[in-house]
Length: 340
Picture 1 (tube, rainbow, N blue to C red):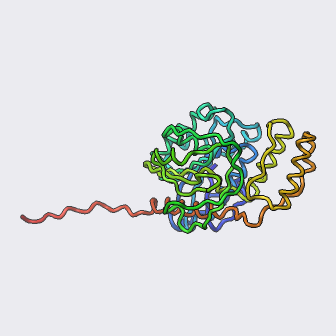
Picture 2 (cartoon, rainbow, N blue to C red):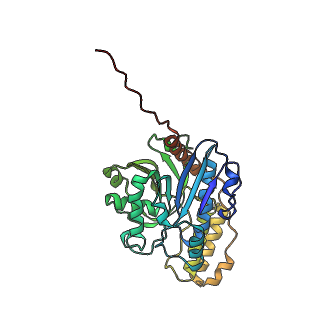
Picture 3 (tube, one colour):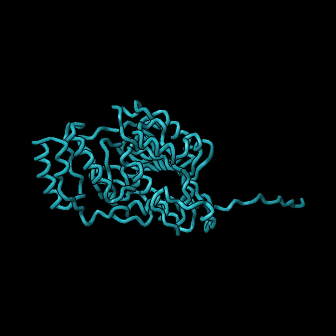
């Protein structure tokens, strides 16, 4: 699937993308970006929409040609597999060309160790390819953990409890990626593991943002391509964490997980947290899938500011790609012979 993104068009879903002839105008150079969407089936289409909206808002006067892919070794339901096979481009097509930018999402873990995941080989091949065939690549959540393990042998560490919620992150290094960023940046995190800042620093990575509660947020490493790593999910919309939380409750009630999920940090308002606390007690006592019909109405905190961090990060990232694209190429100057 190739999507042409122009700031003046309305894109509600990838299925409603205008034909290329309707986007013939080009106001400031065209960028080619690849999205390798490996998110779990329930989040597959939502992830497409989130990145589409972010890139369209960040495009400015430019047109972006977005190519969608997914690792073929990520396990899918029949419905999701049909969507990927019919709407996405084949990953082999990606490796036959160069991209200005690449975005690689995480995937749901199914093995105890990253290098035992069924998609490990495909993912590491993609990491190696991106070093020399992109101007910059973004690695999100599990993809970030996999990348640093493959590149430098840095192993992630299991957390005592899931890092899940919206966290205040501070810029700790001056960088073009965080120019004009709000202080603090409110970023969604949803993970069971973390990378230690000391391990990253020792290997030569530069941490750009961190949270006192969630640890490292955004960090970078320069190869021929500039690699940008997100431990969090700045692209998440306001309801992403709610969908994950309700999914985990459903899995607990269906006995697909052993522990009841913790509330996302700084996410629901106080009244909702109180109602969910009462529901948890009932769910633990009466554990049955039918209880999902008794979940209370949910209200988010008014100050979560979803998307503000992503808007800044992606605007600056697209600007970085554009500077590379639009930099003038100087023609060789004729030699001037000076008489001796």
